Length: 178
Image (cartoon, rainbow, N blue to C red):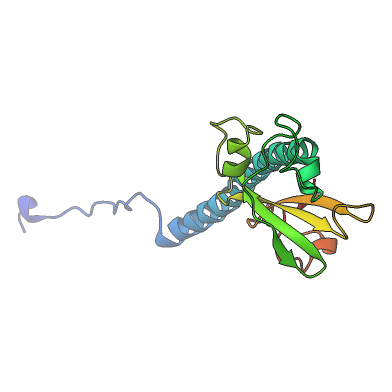
């Protein structure tokens, strides 16, 4: 055999890199961390939106309280049509509907803005996207000593995904008595 034909065994170089198992473990850990971080980010975004919606509903509630104060005679069922001009402000264009044991008038943000109780550029929707509404309630013999009036501000969008135990089976949340 010729020296040129002799082959010298070379050391086998192992290919550098990661095995499939190592890559799968790393991907699993990364996925787990992303899921944990994603839920935390979503929770923070939901909490911020809920706080903003709460402030929005408080602003609407303030406007409804002003409506109750300014239009107390109309709300109490008094006949204000025959009063001299300027005695009472013009009544809202809300229609009273009979309900069991009460009369109810419903309205929204646009009604409060048209009455000048909210700024004209007030947003029509809270951060969570559902419209805010209010209900005026007249109970008893109105007008009269037995007449009771009240108001509620609400949104049908839950303010939080986490439900306190005392609120377990309420159909909608975000109901405030004005």
